[in-house]
Image (cartoon, rainbow over all chains, first blue to last red; front, top):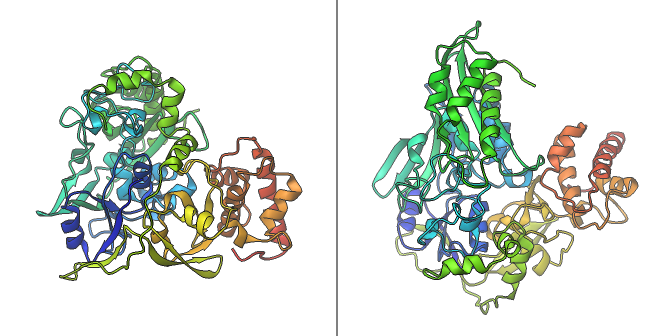
Amino acid sequence: MNRFEVVTPRDLPNAVKLLSGRNHAALAGGVDLLDLLKQNIVAPQSLVNLKGVGAMDAIETDESGGVRIGALVKLSEVAANPTLRERYGAVAEAAAQAATPQVRNLATVGGNLLQRPRCWYFRHPDVNCLKKGGDRCYAPGGLNRYHAILGGGPSFIVHPSNLAPALVAFAASVKLIGPGGERTLELERFFTLPRIDPTRENVLDTGEVLIEVMIPAPAPGAASAYLEAREKQSFDWPLVSVAAIVVSDDTHLIRDARVVMGAVAPIPWRSHEAETALRGARLDSSAAARAAEVALKPAAPLSDNGYKVPIAKALVRRAVLRAGGIETA
Amino acid sequence: MPGNGDDQRVHRLSRRAFIKGAGAAAAAARLIGAAVPLPAVEVADNSSPNPDGAIAERLGPGAVTIELKVNGAARKITVEPRVTVLEVLRDHLGLYGTKLVCDRGACGACTIHLDGHPVVACMMLAVDARGHEIVTIEGLGTPDRMHPVQAAFVQADALQCGFCTPGMVMSIAALLEDNPSPNIDEIKRAVAGNICRCGTYPHVFNAALAAAKSRGAKPKGGNA
């Protein structure tokens, strides 16, 4: 780890000013940042401490019935929040399943969305891969069992955030403050594919700070589910995760659905195919299975990660059924 | 970071060395890291130029004197801002009960309480711990006056090599503060971030259940 200073700006505009300079990095919970520093993946001269410069640490219900989550809110607070658990179940569940209790008490919502990928080529200090500005991604010809089966190329990372698929399912937005002022962006548009720029996972500009996540009020009759499959049950990065929202009536007629997969693509992967298949259908196990089939139809596995396809199908099917109030074995 | 020729380098790495380097077995990375000589400590004051008052505080990169509250006592230490809470506890305060294993927040051996909540001490900068209450295994109980969880670990034979034990005890002690009578699933979730290579989990779960029972009998032990 290189040496660095830790600077606490007086307020957010000054944080933006500092972060616009070269070799600065934002410090919130610090969990992913310390990992990157210890691996010598980043070497900033200055950490800009965001704690105490603005509120950013509350979960609040807004006038329109939606919820605002400050970027500095801890994952453990998201997991335990009664409003989120009741109305945005998939979000609370995704937070509860992220990392370990000891990490959830440190890691923040902003950090979870902005953390860098877990790809072992990217995390290796001696490998200069495409994502670090090198000339190629080593996953296609290398060890790729944890890599992307959808949306890959030229980099094949999977997005590491647990929260992101659940938040995208609920049509969340992020508020960013930067040198040019404030902007609000749908979370779905915040993440960006490697074919646009393989060195980044999102469109956060230099100097910009993610300050808040806003989730609109769920539609009446909406219910959600979040499921993940892992190699190790106590805690692990998911092999596949699925967040599903189903808006249905008493007869299980689906008025609307959202299906977003995690750990399968470089961004949270929303399946419009699955959503279209579900809309207007009566929810039962065959409708859920059809949605799962079409969701994974575009999958293009690498040499060692084809196993993710049947896992993702199973999770899409189960998550849709669970969100629709039908329990499965 | 190499540009060309790096391709060749990847292929020279053995599978085992590669996976180690990627942090999956970060203890190896730690050994490599420890071999890098640290720059000489320069004790800088905390008052760098701040003409327009835009900066509330500037620390480092040289060593700065900070105060941490550890096991109920205010402790002054002089460290660079890159130093973690774990390094302060072990290298500066001689509190070796908090173990260094993976140094990446993945094993739980360095679990401490921060304002009563379990956190990994290796993934938190010491300067970020200012103003918070830190409790380590040493602050939980002593051999003469053991915390109920410590006593239950002895009774239930809940350790083998003992390296994960302080972290396990801290996780369970924090759980019992929030939830005095947890069920087995809640106990498993509470120690989900504590890895034991000896496989003592069944005895750890028994110890947690026993500690919950003994705490029920007498109100509260230790100062956690």
